[in-house]
Length: 283
Image (cartoon, rainbow, N blue to C red; front, side, top):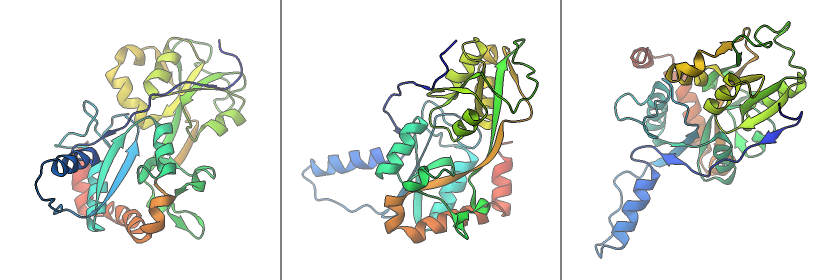
């Protein structure tokens, strides 16, 4: 078993933009600049909002072979694109490890990351929708449920109190907002790059438990029944939180009205018949 300390694993430095994303625009510009032809301004001069997230596929964001499919890309993708369009912008998506996404938001290399729980340290470089100086839960991006998964038949399958993790080694995604809560309950946190790795570690008995966002873990377990068959999902959940589309302060400074419009429009669209019909297509 691991020592009672936090261990940080290395991550690869990569990011993949969705179809029609920024990389294609850069390539097009390069070809024009070196073709000897006069430069032609793009007909689409809307501000681009690149939203970064992890590569955990689900019905919110349906990643296939590292990119969004043209048909049914995910209901959150459709919602974000519609909200951006209504605000006079366009939404694009980039996929990468969560730590990388946060770093790129901090440097202003992408405009936003989702779904990000509110943390004071993130608020130093990121902006959340606020109301009366506090995060506005009416303009959330996602309800987040952190759940513990343990090896079936292990001593940890039925702990006396699931809210006490004293002495347990717990695998969790790097820089996940749940980490301080796990440490306050006495867990030794082992940070890894993604949910698949942490679930596999729990199934193999390399850690006492894996704590993951339920919506992210479910499609992974559906895709890997060999791992699912070795795990038990504990109840009640470890914690329930709210996640937001967190924008970079660098972008927000010059685009405040656009960002506020995006948050508010996204919330308003959730109460429309358009959203209800679109969302039901993914059930």
